[in-house]
Length: 237
Image 1: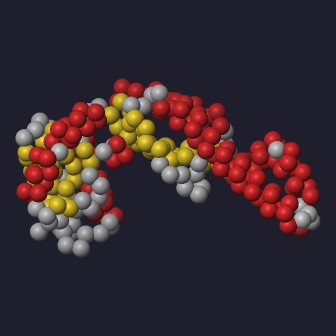
Image 2: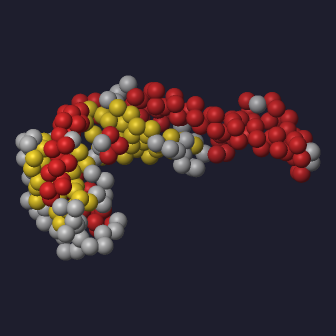
Image 3: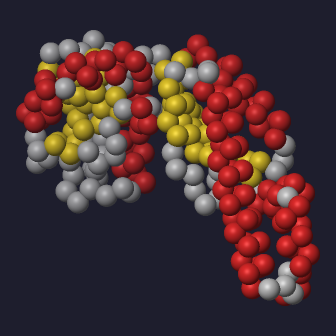
């Protein structure tokens, strides 16, 4: 049977996992694979594993229990090894790198921020600040104007939307990154201008949260800030 891997800790981690169960139905009991200065928390992998709600929550529960007592390298849901010996071999082969990352993560948590802006508010700003857009809107109102003018208007607005979203995202990251140890910027969705994760020291959490709130207050109701954390540092492993 394959081995399901939840996370990696230093060998000195207390591993208080009583009552914590793994993935599968029935839930798989947890065990450890030790190699030198590292420990991997694993279980048997159930056949036909899929990302069901119960199993995803079980995986997350193991990681959160480990994080309560010290730095943990969380594995993504569904990571399998052929057997425990292969896990031990990986710990041996990558031991120095894993230990360095654990030292970096000690006392830190991940916070994720997604920011979106109402489209009408952004379009209103573009119209107010662009003479050419106002001119073309007037010319093409109620289906008037040439085909070329309608194409030009659409192209200008599209380019402005992209440029302004990118600039706003950069300003937000710059404003907040000084309070984080590391930053991982993801791809924004069609409805968001920014998706970013921050690795924040436990000592800086209060000031970081306050800084996020200040940025949200400064931008007003046209913006939506979706802020979550503390999270396992998946973005930095």
